Image (cartoon, rainbow, N blue to C red; front, side, top):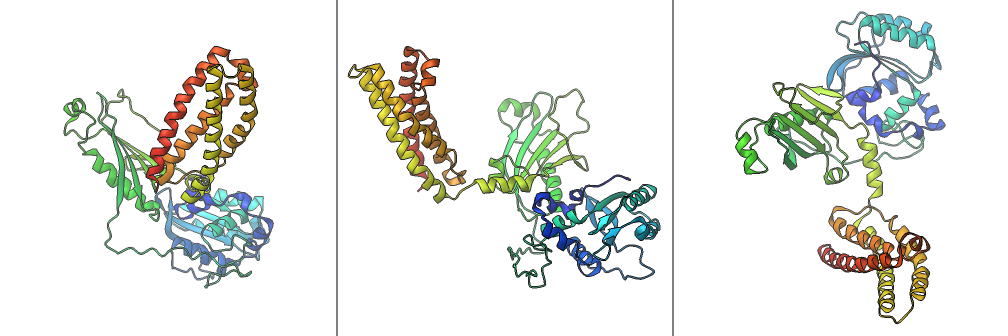
Length: 451
């Protein structure tokens, strides 16, 4: 205890990771500095924490907010907030020390938060940190920049201008908040998850399982932690084996190691963008037995958990890179038609050259004349959006033939002539013609699957 906590370490504030500092412009920052402490800041925080209790302001007040609704990386903390709103353009020690002193009265305090939208002076930060150290609890300082990020992340203020949303979801400048989707859960609904793949990675010294799990994207971290524990416990006593030899070695013996890879959907799995990775190792497993470990940032009982703090930003990058099925196919077809036609011209020219109907020099000149257009189309193919799952294989087949055709003309380019001698070039061309035929057959097979 007594350490500085990052704002995204607070589970209830973790969505702030999706809002980068660069998105907070001067206009948003100015509007944030104009937030009232009681009617805006305090209310927004309680809504984010789902804490309906209100602290009466007066001489008996110890903190602006005192709540047990805060978790730091899964650990529940009694937390006190000291807040300074728009009336404090500069927050000095003189204006807040008396409030810091009151915090020492609270037993079992686990986290203190000092937040202001004005400029926080050095002496105020010094006294706040000293209070935390003396009290033996962790601490967090939130300035105007982080308040703006936090309130945008949780849709309390408008991301376009920084003005607060009213009860109708409309900001001062009439921008309307996205309503989102209504999520309904029955009180007795069981937590659900799907194991989309399970691997037996046992060896002679330990029975080991690795599983990829998909779960509902609306589940909170607390729910995910429960699922991690349930899935790990289930896999400990699983009896799936990759072959009879491993089964004979470990039959009905509980697993010694369980690894989980948690995702929200198949795109996460495809892009290796995990919400988190977990590892459980039997404490009685001999230390000399090799096992794969990783750097964790949370301990859940006897399970190590590594939360991917960049999950949402990476998700946004991947989502922006993906196109719809229609967009991808519309982009591929003209490039495919153009490159295949040029590839056939190259193959026909090579056939005439090998039959002696044209000289090598004339063949090379024709290939070099076509090459710039092939290169242009090949570069265009690199700008095609990533394909959705139902046309992924077709997209890959097309990209294979694009590379094949590009290589075909590379052999006879000016650079290719310097790298490969004549006999080597011709051998490579004959080999790539076979590859071209194989690639085209695969495209025909994959195309039949996408309609």
